[in-house]
Image (spheres, rainbow, N blue to C red):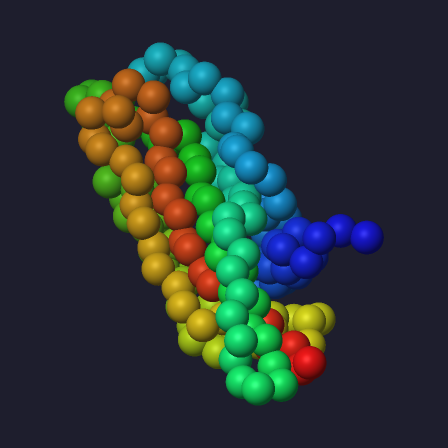
Length: 158
């Protein structure tokens, strides 16, 4: 049997794939990205968005005299090699904008008290998006990375 946090990650993966009509989400610990081609070279299949659901932390506390609350923090990583303008060599803002919007859509989907599909007594209690990139590193590696962090709370009687 998988650990509880792994089971929650798998449920979140299924929800992302179902809600956004893609099968790019998977549970993992790091993206699998190929080296970016030089500006002007074809980006053969590299422009596909990757979504990884990453288990982070588990904490627990007494919720009441007869119940315990477990909080599971997960990061939903969004990764993509972005295209560049062949004239300037700059990352295409429209592509980056689309990735930022995708992250916001994920965050909005998992708003407070969203019940995790298939899991009893599991609800999202917080979410936040962290964009981790700078244009200098995006120019060299062309890699966009962002993380939507969610906290899932499970309350157990006893």
